[in-house]
Image 1 (spheres, rainbow, N blue to C red):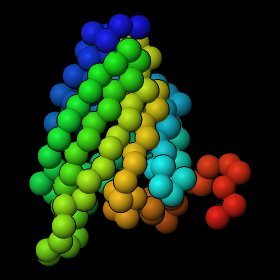
Image 2: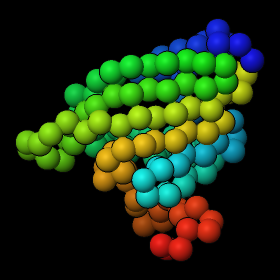
Image 3: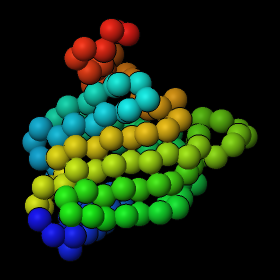
Image 4: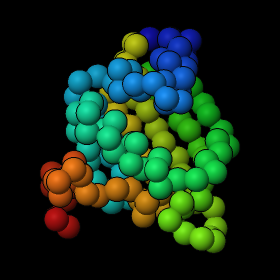
Length: 136
């Protein structure tokens, strides 16, 4: 896979994030991992819903740096917590694993974990601890 292929896939994802069905860029078994907590979300619909809920808690998001490599992309950014009246900006990094035209995994690093949604529809959380994590 080339850097250009990875860039095209990420361009499709970010374009769809602006109001389209961005989940169409995910493989069926895509995963989201919040590295600081070990929380895992699995599957195209669950990851999409999780990202929508997370973005609903983020305001004034800004990209500091975006880097694309062969089969991976990295976004460094910051935002405000929409639930807070005032507060410091929250810095984060998101890593994407890309396989051809598809994103196969997403990992988030940094204090953004405090903003991640944990309750899914009807009280069923799409968030699970990774297996082997004894903190559950």
